[in-house]
Amino acid sequence: MTETVLALVLGVLFAAGTFLVLRRDLVRVVFGVLVLSQATNVYLVTVGGISGVAPIVGHGDGAVTDPLVQALVLTAVVIGFATTALLLVLVYRTYQEHGTIDLEDVEGVVR
Amino acid sequence: MTTNLVVAPLLVALVTAIACLLVRTLPRLQRACSLLGGLGYAAAVALLVARVWPAHTLAYQVGDWPAPYGITLVADPLSAFMLALAALVALPTLVYSLSYVSGEGQRVSYHTLFHFLLVGTTGAFLTGDVFNLFVWFEVTLMASYGLVAFYSGRESTFAATRYVVLNLVGSSVMLLAVGGLYGVTGTLNMADIARWLADASASEAAPVLGLSLLLLVVFALKAGLVPLQWWVPSAYAAAPAPASAMLAGVAKKVGVYAIVRLGFVVFGAAAPGVVAPGVGTGLLAAYGPVLFVLAGASVLVGGIAAIDRPTIEETLAYSSIGQVGFIVLPLAVAAAVPDLRAVGVAAALVYALNHALAKPLLFLAAGAVRDAAGTTDLDALGGLAGRTPVLAGALLVGGLSLVGIPPLAGFFGKLLVFRTAALGAQTVTLALAVLGALLTVAYVSRLWIRACWGEPTPAVDAMADPGRVHVAVVVVLAVLVVAVGVGFDPVYRFATAAGHVATDAGRDAYVRAVLGGGL
Image (cartoon, rainbow over all chains, first blue to last red; front, side, top):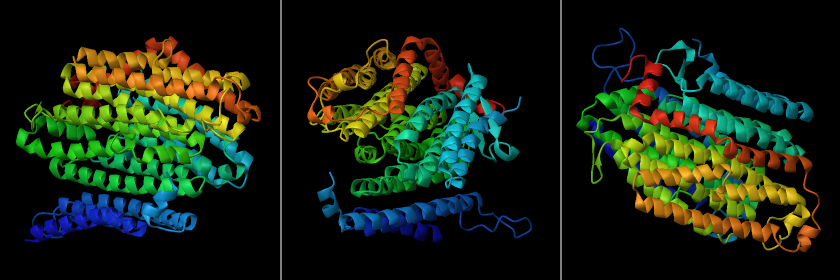
């Protein structure tokens, strides 16, 4: 049940991210990139299994959740944070230089 | 046998990058530090190449965690070849930067970004772990974002924004594929994935086909192959000339390297029972047509678009799209014809070396012209050969090497690409390569004749003498292009040893070195 819901949520997230990336408004593009990278992180967490217990000796019985994917997500989140911050700076600089964040108008002045 | 040497180039570049940040208040010390770091990097790479030569594989287990639990750094002939290529480009480019980039720019960020670019590419060449490869890609990209946005004017800001957005989407896709691979194979170590694939049944390995194609697309984006080439021209035009030289010469090759390493060494291990719909069996058979379309389209689009560009840099940027197509063309043949794996990969590596020397040479020469004349507009230039014969001569050497005239490095690059296509009886590939070569002749001769031939134009008459360091570095690169062509035998043997890792025996040696015990 949870798997089905998560699969659907992932699909919606990727669709929303793709939709936003294709917008003319540069800030929406940034949001789209953000949604895409977060959707990827959610996908990674589901790869490790979501029904198990914490992988600590003596913590509980039954299948454990794979902790490795969570370490990967942690790394990916940190990298995503840094690159998104840089992207936001660049978008702001683009606004300063071009006076607009509408991609049609920006494309008009640059090749 | 100790394998600590494997980590040396990485450490040298990392320490230099941080040191350049720490001493930024003392410009002279910072420059000395950066140059020393560049020399140290070249020395570390030379030592490593000497240890790997002729065909050893050194595996360094980081933190002494045994593979596949820890991260493994692996130096085999393929990695060593790419590292040697990076060092050959980086050192002259760094010397050039010292006198080209403004003092303010050098003080604030240039040296740190330059060395972090080296850190990222070195890590990507050495790592034996798929997720770690993702991290090194990000390090490389972070530094290149900074270099593309370096001038922070109208054009470079927007070029950098475009570059960042494209690569962030690319990174998400790569992470998705890496996560999927881990879910399917249960490991991230490249050698361990190869071993898993060799043992897996066809139905178990089937999901890897889609995931590996996703990875291939991301690598094509990094290499700037059509239809993912949109970031290339604006990014190269925006970055300072030495940074463009590094991006075109070294950073792009990371994508090519990743295609070889993962496509041929890792995914090539899959049992032939895995069916690729429509094209036969085996994972590699499925990559063949994909690589062919990407490479063929790049050769044509890059070549045709380069013919009528208004400036030298733009011509070079489009040319680099076409030239990377030439690098990937033999890989497409190698993927389709199992007997040609080693030959095809060796051809791609030789061509990559040629492009890695010739393109920075041309970018740096263009930078010297821009510095002295204030423009690289082909309408404004003319008669450079009379004004600065040395610079014009170097431009000619670089251009002819792209065309493939003996005895330059480019001749053997082109020769091996044609030979691979002919051996594989791939008529269409061969025809495409000939067409691409004709296009190269067209845009190189146009570039040189418009810029260097004829009577000097007012802009050339008024131009200052090009900087002596600039000319010296460009000449050094031109000599290297000639030297690689004249003394081609050791280069060819090195490339053949590197191509050997794509064969079954080479893969077995790789897996043995990393995991102990063969496939």
